[in-house]
Image (cartoon, rainbow, N blue to C red; front, side, top):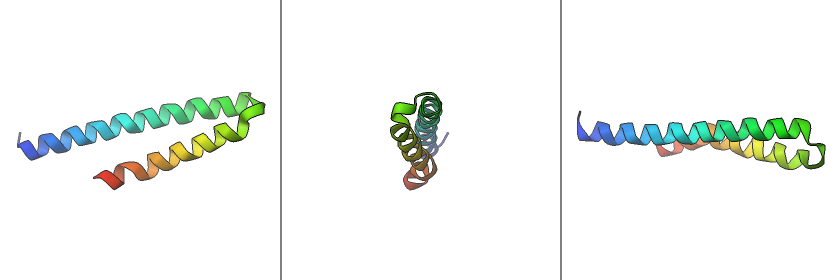
Length: 62
């Protein structure tokens, strides 16, 4: 494989790992927001920030 493509492959794999972490965090916090009324705003804000990161993060790096 061409070295440039290996670098690109590594970057894509790292971005995908970050996307998977963001999705897991969003799902965990969304479930918490549904079940824990006392801190619902904090969980919803976390979900919003993680979704923003998910939607805008990878494109900024490629």
